[in-house]
Every structure is written in structure tokens, then in C-alpha cells.
Image 1 (cartoon, chains in turn yellow, purple):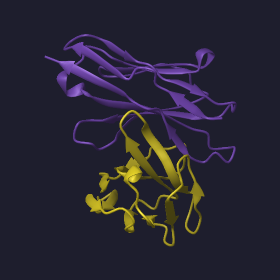
Image 2 (tube, chains in turn red, brown):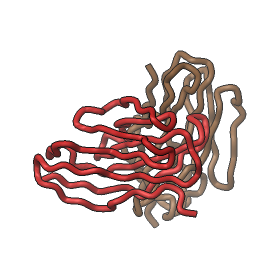
Image 3 (cartoon, rainbow over the protein chains, first blue to last red):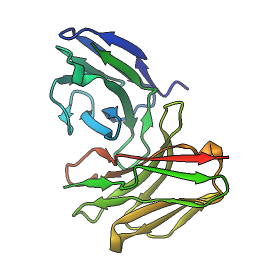
Image 4 (cartoon, rainbow over the protein chains, first blue to last red):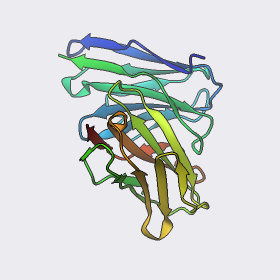
Length: 112
Length: 116
């Protein structure tokens, strides 16, 4: 079982470049999340989705956009990357917020 | 507001010692769920336990145990007879599904270092 798959696993961007991180889940989960993990800050919620076609802002949404056109996919976009967006990004999905969340392997993004 | 506080940034113990990781949460809602996740050095996040707000019974799973106390808004995690393989970052998390706060919020994590 694939579970939650994130692509790419590593990426280096120059300031101002754009990119899209892809998250795919094969568990038919309604809820999907994008987090960023920084030293000493834990996991901070960027955006989340409670179902296909819906998205909502989390704690740190600035500089990011998301889309959930298909239930199984949740895309995170950076329109103009900044060094402050250097981080490890995790995607997660769950059947509901009161159930276990499954995480992808993470994407290590460096913006230079 | 919904918030999770893990005041212990890093804990170092020697193998076979018992260790407790603290988690304090904040929510005004009566229905909520608490979770613990483990992040080993390899980086993936592994689910450990889920507890709902109506079940205050302590839970034990092997060397792991959890103490949920609504009176102090705490959901502490104890590892008995720690092992080197327990070295990881541990996250406590909170969700409150019934109020539109349909998201999972994490604490800042506690790094546990178990030395031989």
C-alpha cells in the first residue's frame, strides 16, 4: 500500500522561482493537510482541506497556495519562493480529524 | 483557541531509565481528540495513540503508557525502561472536530535522546 506519497523528496530553488509540491493518497481520505517543520517550531499547519474542491488556511498560509481538484491529490504551490520558506514539508491525510493521520515522507526544500 | 504545549524541548536519559514527556493542551470544547506521534531520525511520522476527551482511562502498550487528565488539561506519555531505539522527536497533537476547527494542531515536539 502506498499510503501518502509526496513528490519531490528534495528540491533546491532560487529566490523568486515557483514550484508545486504534489501529495497523493490512496486511502480515500477526506481530510488532507500541508505542514512545514522547522527547528524548534514543530509542525505548523499551512493549509488544509476537508474534501474535494475545498481548502482552508492554517497557521502559516502566507506565500503558499493549494488546490484539491481531485480527492486523492493535494497540491502546495509556492509562487515566488523566499529563503524563509526553506523547510521540510509534510503532507498528511486522515479519514476525519478524529482519526489517525497518515504522513508522507516529507520534502526537503531549500531556497537560496 | 486551540493550542498544544510541549514545554520540554529535549530530554536525555540513559538506557533503562523511565522518562515522561509532557503535553498540555488548550481548548474550550468538550469534544476533542489527542494524539501522540513519533518522528525517528529517519524523518517519517509514526502514529502512536489517539484518545478522545470522554475516555480518561490510562492506556498501556508495552513499555509505553499515557496519562490523560482533563483536570489539568494534560496528556503525558511515559516510556518505561527506555531503549536507544526510543530516541526520536515526539509530538503531541489536538483536534476539535465539531466546531469548524477541522484541523490537527501539533505541539513543538520533545526530542528524546537515549544513550547506551
